[in-house]
Structure formats: C-alpha cells, structure tokens
Length: 505
Ligand SMILES: Cc1cc2nc3c(=O)[nH]c(=O)nc-3n(C[C@H](O)[C@H](O)[C@H](O)COP(=O)(O)OP(=O)(O)OC[C@H]3O[C@@H](n4cnc5c(N)ncnc54)[C@H](O)[C@@H]3O)c2cc1C
Figure 1 (cartoon, rainbow, N blue to C red):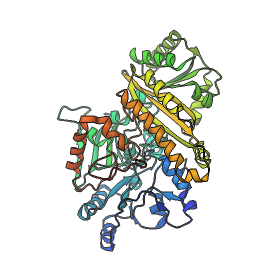
Figure 2: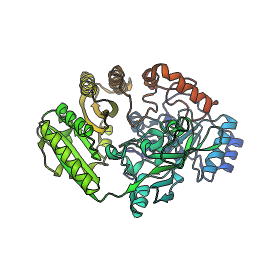
Figure 3: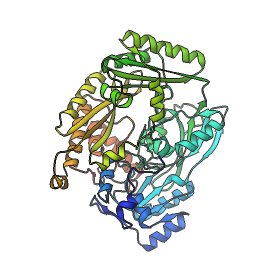
Figure 4: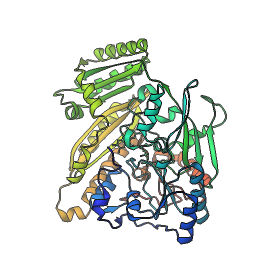
C-alpha cells in the first residue's frame, strides 16, 4: 500500500473542504496565532487538501463517511515538525492559546485516534524520520518517532539486525504510532509487543518540556515505569519524538509448519500447550473454519500457521514441540504451501476497499483473555455477532499468544437491509454500533481486555471507563495532572474533562 487511505478523499471532496460529521466546538487559531505557529515550525500547512487529508484515519466508519464526501472533523492547521525542538515550540503555542493539538503519523489507526475532533492543530510526525544510533554491543536502536516500518527495518537489516516488529500495517504505520497504541507485530509470540521491546522514550509534554523516560539499562526498580505510562496513551499525555528499542541479530535459520484441526477449540488447546512447554514460535496463528476457507481454501478444518526463526538448535526444538502438541491434539499435518500463501498476502489489504464501496460494513475487533476464558469467549463473541440479523459474516483467528492467554482477532461484515431512505437514517451505523456493543459486553463480562493492540481512539472511548471500573479515576487524575488544559488529543480515551465523543450514543 503506498497511500494512507483506501479511499482517496481528494477525488470525493472535489477540491473543496468536506463536511465535518462531529458537531463539536472546533477551535481555529487567528492570524496572530497562525504566525506564531509558522515561526515555530518549518512546515505549516493550511490548504484544503492537507487539512482534509489530516482529518481521518483508517477507522472504518470514517472511511464510509469519506465515500459519502464527509470527514469526522477538520483541523485548522497541519504542522509538520522536523525536530523535537519544533514539536516543543508548536506545543508551547498550543498551550499558551489553549488550542487542541492532535498528533498523527501514518494515520493507519483503526479507532479514530488521529482524528482532530476539536479542530486546532494536527502535528504530523512523518517528517521526523530515521535511525539515530545503533548500539551493536548492547543490541539497542534509537530512532525518530515518525519513521515508517520499511526504512526502519531496512536500515537495521543492513547492519545485520532486526526489530522483529511486523504489524500487518508495517508499510503504513510509524514507530511513534506503534508506541502510542501498544502495537503487536505478527512475530509477537517470539519477540513480544512493542512495549516489550521499548527501553526509553523522548516525550514532549503538554507544557512543552522535553523529558526522557527509561534508563540506559535493560530493567529498573526505580519507581513505576514511565515508559509504560506513555505507551498506549494515544497522544493524550505527550508527543513521543524518539524511542530506544531492543533489537536482535537477524536469525540464522527459519522453518515452518501447517497443522489442520477439525475444530477451533482443539487447535487452541494445542497452542496453549506449545506455550506451556516454553516454545515460542514467532508466528502462531490459528484460523477458525470460516477464515481457513476464506484465506487458504481449506475445505475442512481450522488451519494453524507456524513460522519460526532462531538459532538452529532452538528452532528444531521449537518445531519438535509444535509437532508433538499438534499431533496429540488431533491435528493433521497440512500443506506447507499454506505458510507461503500467508507470507504472500500478510500485508495485503486490497480486499477492503471494494467492500467499503459496495456499502458493506466491515471491521475487526481484537481482544485478549486468559486461556481459561478464551474458548467460552470465542463462542460468545461469535454468537453475539451472528445473532444480529444483518450480519453476513463473523469469524476469528488466534493471532498473538502468551503463557497465560492470547489475543482473538475477530472480523465481522454486515449489510443492513434497506433502501436509500433507511440508509440515510443511519442503518449501517446502527448495525455497526450494535455489533461493537454486543462484542464489548461479552468481553467485559468475561473480565477480558477490550483491546489487545488497536487501542481505544474514538471507537472504544465509551467502553474504557466501564472496563477499568474503580481504576478509572486513576487514569483521569494522570491526564488532568499531565495535561491540565486538556490540549493533547482531546476527546480520546473517554476522559471526562472533555466531551466524550461517541459516534452514536
Ligand atoms: C490494514 C491495517 C492493518 C493493521 N494491522 C495492525 C497490526 O498487525 N498490529 C497493530 O498493532 N496494529 C495494526 N493496525 C493498526 C495501526 O496500524 C496501529 O495502531 C499503528 O500503531 C498506528 O500507527 P500510525 O503511525 O499509523 O499512527 P496514527 O494512526 O497516525 O495514530 C494513532 C494514534 O497514535 C497517536 N500517535 C501517533 N504518533 C504519535 C507520537 N509520535 N506521539 C504520541 N502519539 C502519537 C495518535 O494521536 C493516535 O491517537 C492496522 C491498521 C490497518 C489499517
């Protein structure tokens, strides 16, 4: 994918500014403030195209609106800082004049996190790129937050290293976006999520001070870990400008397997036992029968795709554990070609645009639960989605696994019956909202997490408070203390000091 969005807004908006869907107070800096911003940052854009492009991300509902010629919300200004100093100067102006500052980067977020709900300034981080330092003794890299996946990994590989972080959105997302959303890559079972790889951050705070979190050390017992505070904060607590991450040498060898299970729960059990014995195959993805048929054309059963890369001794032991556990859980060894098929298509998202354009509502929901709760939760989420009369399709796969539990990644699609009039009354939105609500209720009922790696953004904002229960005020106090004027990405994560923007209450 070379473009940021599956639907190009320029063509739709016909050159003029598209309409804004959220009727929230939108703050527009006056000319004097604009001049201050221009003095603070090398690139400040106010043209129609730049503002429209910065108005949305991959949140499916905003893609649907874009097809209809509107966007969630429009910024007044897009600033593209080239350095940490420029970020700090922009934030200082926003702080002084109480202007919302929404950080955005690859705009590949799928929950509306980068949407500038209250207008103001979008801080586009994609001009701050590149590796600043590789420590090949301690195995760490320091890189700018706006660096996209391909240049980061290419430069590491040129030096014989890999980060091991491969989200499906690798080509369209940045280091800062991964950190701000607690991203998970496809090799996470061996290497962990982005928060497991992070050793230090540089952050511009709401009062424009620049801080460094973490230590030049692998672990610390020096108070709560401030790295973890900023990771997952989705631009609401500070702007991440740089990070130091742990890397590893490119592994010597790799191998793969496919196993087929007659039912999803047998496959889940095999995966649990593989982890329990200490094996960590980089990729371990179990598809339910609906997804196995769709992705691999398997006529019967659930496909488990295994890929690992490591030192040869470790690799062969890992694959031995995989084979033993799969065989003893009624698996049948499958065609290795399925792994090649998976590699070929793993970052291909071209199937989405035609669905959106055909008026089909499609989205994904990723959650995580303990192994004990996972089978029941898979069944209850699938039942909840399939019970909606307009659902065409609901499916899931196991995508990221740990000793104690795993992430289930669900996909649903629906086409609300109706005519043009029904559509204008928002049938698609009603269906979409009902699908999310039912799934979130099932997940919260099981005490599982409402998101494993996509984050909260706008879409999950109204659920976070319930999910955290009595711990919620702690989050709110942190926000109020670090950003007392509420200028950083207002309207996200459901903070009560702002209008909690939910699309359909
Ligand atoms: C097709 C597709 C596949 C995907 N697959 C995966 C996947 O496999 N794994 C996964 O984890 N995610 C996946 N995602 C979701 C998305 O790519 C991630 O959330 C990613 O981390 C977002 O990065 P970005 O640079 O695009 O951030 P943006 O979308 O621009 O921003 C996301 C959020 O982070 C904040 N933010 C961005 N940069 C900074 C910064 N420097 N400082 C502070 N806040 C910041 C923004 O304010 C916003 O709240 C997928 C998305 C798509 C469209």
